[in-house]
Length: 404
Image (tube, rainbow, N blue to C red):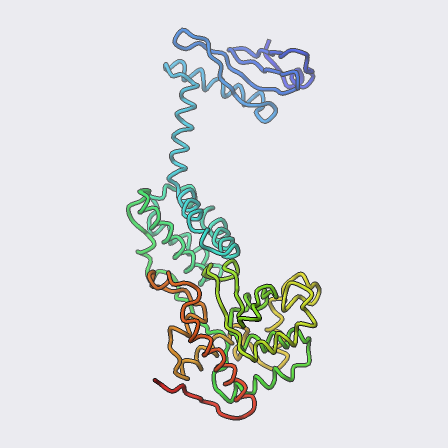
């Protein structure tokens, strides 16, 4: 007699496995623990075999019967349903291995060891949000330029033009990896040059004129907000590191005897330890703030918790309070300020770039250790601090460095 849902629901587990038959070789197997699995008993090549049709109630009685009929059709054609299922799974797995998503994740796994956790997270998020839903399951060797452009245009249409360009570059890296590993023969991203709306370049606000720098320094000295923020501003001008590196600075990273701040690789964009020589003025700023924050891990802690770094907006808000608009000055602007003036003062570009911790494009030179140019950088950082003092006090404003 055929089964019905009521019978299935009302049948309780027993000490031994039960079988409720529905006909055509299909039955529901009920284990002593209450598990219920659909099975199909059939003969192939003169031998009795079993095929799993799924677990109840995930697979309903109706669905199980449909699967039974599919298996019987295969048997009628002389095909073993079990072997057919294995072959189908293998084909699907092979297709997935060559999909854009599988290759992209393989590329990501190789690359993320050289990235900071935050950067790796952003890359994976972009792929999952803007690429995988639209072409993740496509065989990577079949993706065409128009198909990739359609994905990028979807991003562009929401006003995220810069993001569209970044994801085009990201996809290009995945395709290059696919070519190197034998998954594809060409990179469709290279054919999209000029297809996207150009990115409007906006430079971060900075101040580079000596007289304006002098006014900024005096405004920072007179800042009436938190002492932590005031010291962070002064320190930022002296060491010109990235805003994230500044606010996450820890006391344990300061080597007082060597007069150095050693930023761990895990905090650096290039994943390489960075040494910041500390001028006499930089050490004075640290000594000023040490009695206030020295008991906690962070030099510039959050206003609400000493165990969290300063807010991302603290320095920016302070600059706004002092009257500097977004287009005039930002926390990142201290880097451009130092770079511009130090080049004008005659310091070697390589020394300046190394102190800015800019990624080295030349692979051979990139292999140099973090102490490259350190003696010269030490002189430069002290000269920079002295230069800022001169500006603040209204003295010399363009102390060009004498050439040897």
